[in-house]
Length: 226
Image (cartoon, rainbow, N blue to C red; front, side):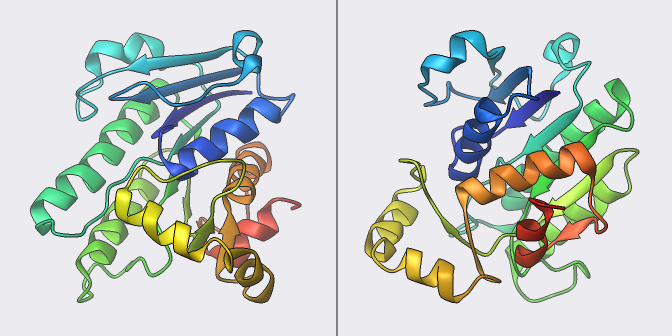
């Protein structure tokens, strides 16, 4: 299987890169981002791993020749909505996801496209919470494309395997919660997922599909062994 990953430097992105490297069925991994990822693994030299650094992720025309022939795309790229106006947040959240998906739907029609949004995403696009409206608008647009599109909506994410968030505020929050996250993961299985589980579920859905196109936390966990 050949996979393309957007947002490999983020917390979820790091998790899915790790799981791809561990999966013998994944023969090629290509990441696309505005900067090099922090992935450091001796297996990279033999895994078919490659990074493409491309500054303008809203326009992929210059690298289209490198985007054909993939079986799945994991889109984990995202930003915090804190302090952002809706137009700016939509330009990044909606704009970058659709730029990638529309390009891939043309180059690899029918490929699997997994988009990471979040618990509480508003499919009606009419709610009061700005980020949820924009994420819902993005999901709906992706589901209309000629792709096998799946929306992942994780809630609380437990970082494992040395993975850390790029966002300073999130890193601080995770540091405070680190002692209790394993307990929450056990006590609230429908609200907490690990980066390991999300990566494994993405691969499982890419290989076998899933009965639902929108996967909440319990669906994401169920997909691992579906």
